[in-house]
Image (cartoon, rainbow, N blue to C red):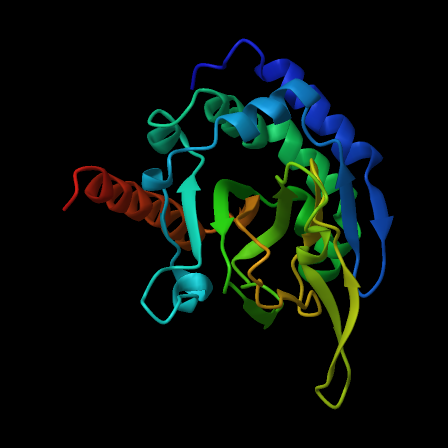
Length: 255
């Protein structure tokens, strides 16, 4: 894929953000990211959000997140070449940076203890398949407490608000007690140009309470690194991507 002229600068900035990210151990190991994108790129991202018509409803766990009238409360745009060519150019730049191998390697290095805990010493030779997705949540969206599917190795979420006016709608992190009770331990601040990352494990419980009427949109980037070792993994990951390509095509032609 041809790299945009500013991709190297953006990759370097994202790498610095990953390397300097604060690490927290409660209630599970995670990174807190700040200043993820250069200020000018971040401003351009906010000014060049895709047209609402470019978004489509989420599948999977978020498929059931709908209002009574059927309106999805979480929609998405895939930040992959087959989709970014239809939206403002800055998103191609962002896609290229987030899918860069050096960025993936930096996340794996910073999250090594969690990856080793789950996969053992062989984690260092594992391959991961990055999928960045621009998501938009609206009033009524919620997602229950969950640890993420085992197909995921690393979960990253980057927040895209203009200000801190709804800082209380960040993702909540939980501890599960032996009797099954969940304790709300921490909440990420929904602040401009920030985010978090963790190695997916059996204890990475997180969720989000129902968004209230004060929320116009909750825009984020979900950067997911899927396990990509076996033939089955590769078929699943590329098959899912191809399925999204087909669904995006159907949406664009209005079928």
